[in-house]
Length: 79
Image (tube, rainbow, N blue to C red; front, side, top):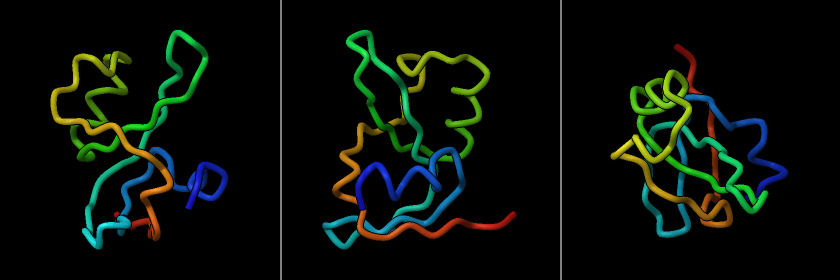
């Protein structure tokens, strides 16, 4: 999907389908690294909420670095 299309789904609880065919539920969020490059992470909604309180991605154990090109479908979940 790429970064442009996924901007609407960042920090939202969503269902994602990855290039591998895997279906996952959670949140994709962006962190700007020291080199001013964007890094994207995927985690559960509860781990994302914990990140929002702490604002330090290194503290969140259950996160996964994500290449946005691996996301082929995103659907926002309500509730």
